[in-house]
Length: 241
Ligand code: IPE
Ligand code: IPE
Ligand code: MG
Image (cartoon, rainbow, N blue to C red; front, side, top):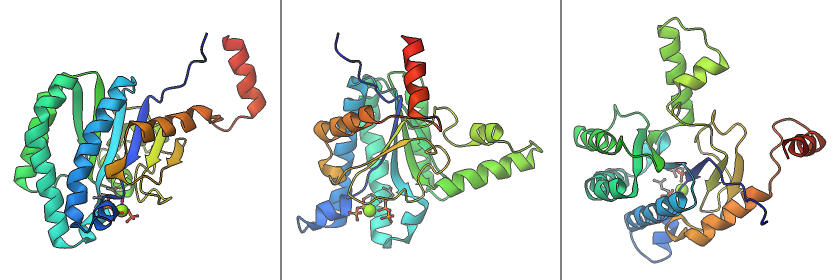
């Protein structure tokens, strides 16, 4: 019988490289972000067909407000447009959408779009898609801790995990960053504690099924030890057989 390849239960992706993709074609950076939406649509389908139940993507960081105003407003427009255009397809594909991040700073139009999309897709169960927008790992941890403190709840690893923005999902098994940089840039600081990290040089707009499969292959070849020794892992696999 063929060896069962481990499929991650949760993949998280830092979708990086849109600007460089556009610059290489002498296009404005925003053209790269638009192309990035198509890459996301492709990868959502690919994850669903590979039976990955949860996909979390980093679309706009707390720090991305520091970009030129024109690029920031272009990104907001792309989000609003994608919400208006894609929700019916997500419905057909059985995708449940969640927005993760600080909504306060977003315009009323964008906020309404997010809420409508979440309500419309709430009954879907094939793939959970978390879109991190105006998200930062530090924001997530600090605001969860502040809420617990305000409620007088003791702060423990368990209570804090349960108060974070991704409490509805298990921690990511695999974190992929495209675009060649090797850093987390404030993504899932708590939840990525034991994730396997995979860095791809492919720029996000070019990220396709083959690039995803390469990351899945790399993931399958890793030994996840969670602090144990290799020998302990081998022994527990033996006893499970
Ligand atoms: C990632 O692509 C998308 C966002 C951060 C919004 P970039 O825009 O960071 O692309 P590069 O890194 O400049 O190529
Ligand atoms: C991280 O990419 C954020 C997103 C992909 C949304 P950046 O391009 O903003 O990260 P840095 O600034 O290079 O670390
Ligand atoms: Mg970047």
